[in-house]
Image (cartoon, rainbow, N blue to C red; front, side, top):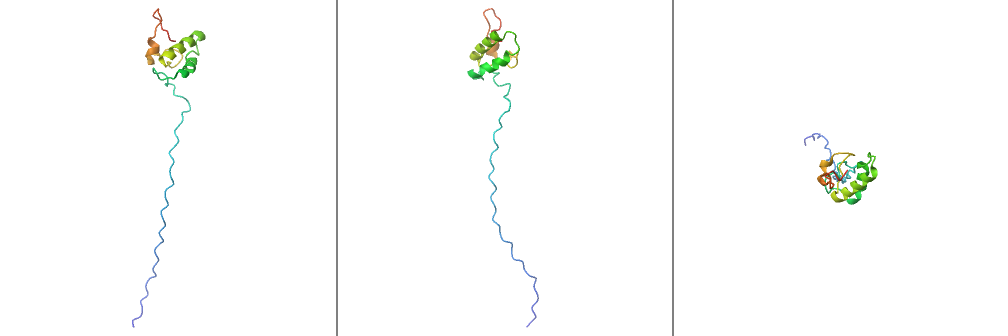
Length: 110
C-alpha cells in the first residue's frame, strides 16, 4: 500500500450567529419652542381672544397713556384677532387693525 500523504488539517466552518435585530429607533421628540415666535398673532385672525390682553400689554408698554391704549388695543384685538408687533407702528401687518378709524378719521387702534 502506498504511504498516506499527510493532508492539511481542515478548520471546521465558523458557527453561524443569528443576526440580532436592530434596536427599535424612537422618533425624536418634537422640539418645543423656548420662546414664542414674535410674528405669531400679527396676521388678521391669528390670535385667540384670550391672547389679546398679553399682546396689548406689550403693545402699550411704553406709552404714558396706558389705560386708554390698553382699552382700545383690547377692543381692536377682539374684533381683528391680531395685534401689530412692537410698541408702535407696524400696523400694515394687520389691515383690520390698521384700517379701523374713528369718526374723525384718525386711527382707532393703537
